[in-house]
Image (cartoon, rainbow, N blue to C red; front, side):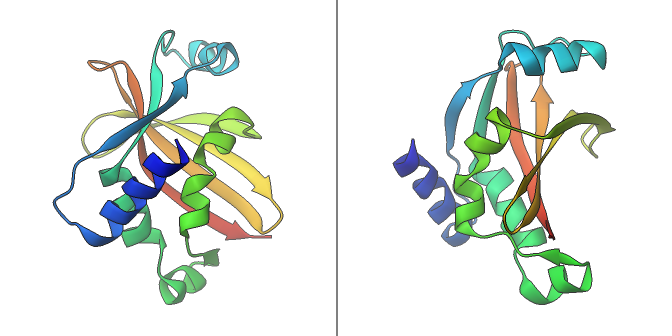
Length: 140
């Protein structure tokens, strides 16, 4: 999976038309239960990371100057590689509503040594996936 994640990162940074995704695991019972409490049935769904979501994270949250002005830290390659860990060992998870496309979202937070990382997925009911949408970090 590390090699596939590296390919996704490379394509997100260097190929504006690239399409690729990597499956990183099934939705576990803990997350499925949190989703049920929020009114969502994601039992049997999988998590995947696609080039588009990674590209979005770098484009919108990867610039030092822009993120500093927001009181945030720019996203790096290493942050993207931590997504499986964030999903598996999140501190909090919320279901904050819909994106502009009308897809419901899942937002995780995980506090690490350098600060708190937020990772956002779209709930894609047709494909039964939770797919990368964006990511950002705040300072410790």
